[in-house]
Length: 165
Image 1 (cartoon, helix red, strand yellow):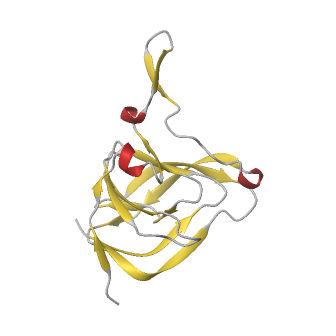
Image 2: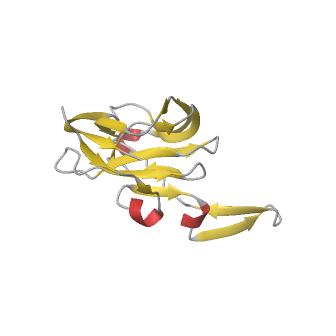
């Protein structure tokens, strides 16, 4: 089966806003000095939305198997009951593939190349591909929803999408 081709663009807060938030100091509107001025706090960069279905916030570490470009996207997922945030722990770039909702199914996908110092927080219900580490195995700190209820919906694309470098 042939695939449509898209190219990733740099991850910026403005370009990603429809899908969630970019987690980086440059995306912060409130900066505070704390601990007697020894620490800068970049405050409230991304909300943690776990309220759906009586959930609770949890923190995990995901270890991503490395992939290379071109990368074939055949499935997207979303979390209807809460947001999901990824922050790289090893400073390595990674690929982010997202799509708007189009009546309960993914719309036109977009790809972003995230630097090793940028995290992403997918808004509740945002279609996205599972973690795509590039070139080397990579660990990510993940904040998402725990608790009862099904917080995962997967969708197999009618036509695969090829993300080229």
